[in-house]
Amino acid sequence: MADRSAIEWTEATWNPVSGCSKVSPGCAHCYAETISLRFRHSLKPWTPENAKENVRLHEGRIDQPLRWRRPRLVFVNSMSDLFHEEVPFEFVDRVWNVMTEASHHTFQVLTKRPEIASKWATHYLAEHGSLGANVWLGVSIENSRYTFRADVLRTIPATVHFISAEPLLGSLYASGTNRRPLDLTGIDWLIAGGESGARSRPVDVRWVRELRDGCRDAGVAFFFKQWGGRTAKAGGRELDGRIFDEMPRAATG
View 1 (cartoon, rainbow, N blue to C red):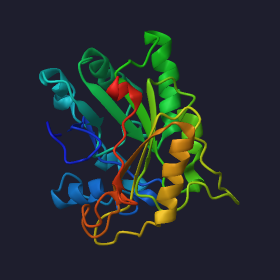
View 2: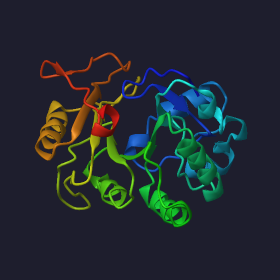
View 3: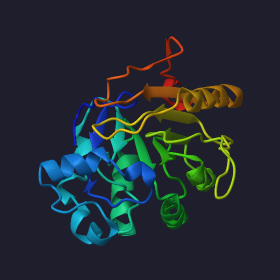
View 4: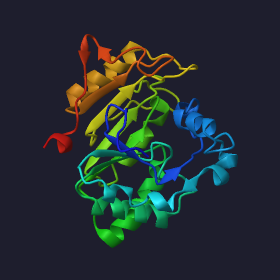
């Protein structure tokens, strides 16, 4: 939890939940797991078998955004997934209620579990009628085996739908067995980035250019975060001589 963040596409982070478990190849070298194990916030690797022990709900952090007076972009659960199987819907409700109450902030919720998010949203909408104009909802997609996450995302009535293609591990436009080219219909914003860290897997410039061009054609804001490498800043942020830091219209008015 931090009032300021080094993540280029946000301004602050808020972690009412910490800990997670791996669900797809993008999770293999999870930075949040590395940090959590290093500082002993988790004692075991983030496998599904250890989820009950590793996923923690932090009651004392729920009202943190209400104490921040200056409006800011807030990335929710940079160290977890709000829609993890071990997070009860009742707790998600409480987190969401704080987000809608703290309407001077804009919240960015990112998940690899959109099916759970969809089930929760049906329940929440029945009671509240809206997910809040200041809450954005996104999914992580690392290759074209997981583009179905965008299909689920667009069925959830959020103000902004976004995709984080980071770490980008393959073309999101590849087709074949269990692969489907990315459909940007109903998507407002796409973040792309290579993996960082000692075991980082390389990103192909062609995959990034595909996303940039696809966003341009679809009218989707495109944000290129990093090339990655041993350190996050190792390769810089330029793509074909330009820095792409577009934000969705909801952020710019």
